[in-house]
Length: 161
Length: 161
DNA sequence: AAGTATGCGTTATGAAATAACATAACTGGA
DNA sequence: TCCAGTTATGTTATTTCATAACGCATACTT
Ligand SMILES: [Zn+2]
Ligand SMILES: [Zn+2]
Ligand SMILES: [Zn+2]
Ligand SMILES: [Zn+2]
Image (cartoon, rainbow over all chains, first blue to last red; front, side, top):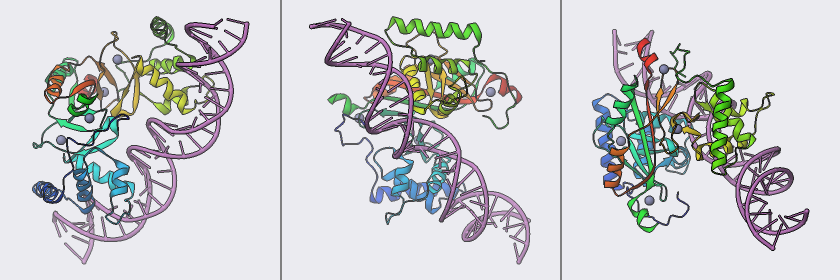
């Protein structure tokens, strides 16, 4: 990502083995409770997001989709991403055209990200939108969703810069 | 924009005539002060943004570029947009892939938008990022810029909905 | 079993942005 | 004024990102 970045450590290393299986199983359980279907393509894309240690581009997911190296067709992945976003299992980061698995426990959070311009890491955090909502309501708006993406340097990259 | 929207009134009708000329002249004056060059393509794209009453897509600008109907080449417009963003004369709205002229007076503001999902209007406002910065610094981040895009219904569309 | 809704596979296309390189114009100093 | 360095533009082509459209399959409902 960053042109001058040599940091390989990620704040969110991808999941593997049991941790990965657990995370997918947790998603499956949530789906059952709401009668949503975690179909094979949806499960596969979720796996890929969870395995990654950085935001994934849609076409990275497409390329990595088949265990045998066969890529997916774009609509397969974009449909899965729509589903995962709708259920809160994944988020799109607008300023990167990339996707991450949700790292927050609660279901009713609003996503916000700290994006490192050096190493590309994207840290999800729980934002405090109260001031923004107050301003919006003062202007007569009815706010439904908020996208917040802060860019800067993560702790690791800040040190070396 | 909105599929069910019949509102034609815009919160920010495009500038015309003298108001447009004044706005462009003000930008030119600012450029002179900082020894930046408001060249013909840059001036033309700024005009188009100011004339519009809604966020403009890059390829809308490309199509509208020539007074004689001749479109611009994509790099012409994208370069101009880079310049206008750099100087704070325009903002990109990430969640729309679209661009607006800056509506705030001060130079050192951070852009934030209230985007109506019904009529497509994008209202710029001055956000309060203090809570977010506090959270980011607590996590060890050095924040450089923040993008905030709230989506919902503008006052006009809220009434009719 | 029949009807309805949802999801998938596939082909093709559309929309958004940039790479690369040559040319032109401005800038500051000799 | 001339030159060198820098910045901006013109142009062609390509890359990246995302969706339309259609037919088939699968799963719920009655
Ligand atoms: Zn999340
Ligand atoms: Zn970093
Ligand atoms: Zn602004
Ligand atoms: Zn509206």
